[in-house]
Image (cartoon, rainbow, N blue to C red; front, top):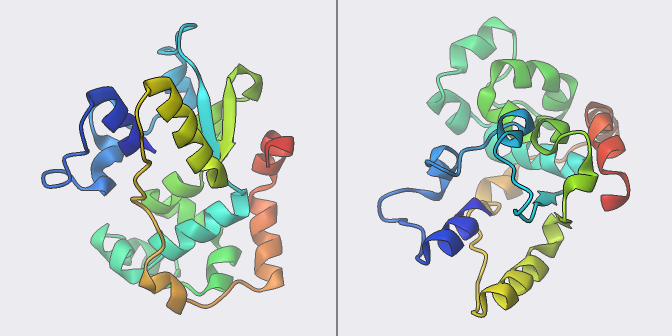
Length: 192
């Protein structure tokens, strides 16, 4: 989504040949900020929108994409996890059972599953529109209409082959993830 906004703001494509999509989270002006950090920059002449997805689906996506040896070793977390008795390649059950520890020790996981409240604030009524992740095409159409040109949302974080090879979460695992996400479900309520 940040790449899409960048392309609107700059009337050009993301400079993929120089900056990977993964670096958008730290790109000047497009950093991921907490709501308290962003709140001071909000203006009444801005149209506020938010994008959400089912909280458990969000956690499973973080597990699939981030809780892997390749990612965690690259982030230098092997020793930290070993010292805590956690696997660098956790099964779904290990991840669900220890999700709070993984968040505490692994910023790359925490940043993908942190409570929505930390990004959206406590009052969702300040938003002009809240889109579910499955409404991205509708958002692109609305932005195209406003911009009077065809705009397409690039898909920079789609599941890759490693997601198909990982085992599934059991019903017990899913219950643990739902408990972990309880605050998100309360906050998002009817928006889901």
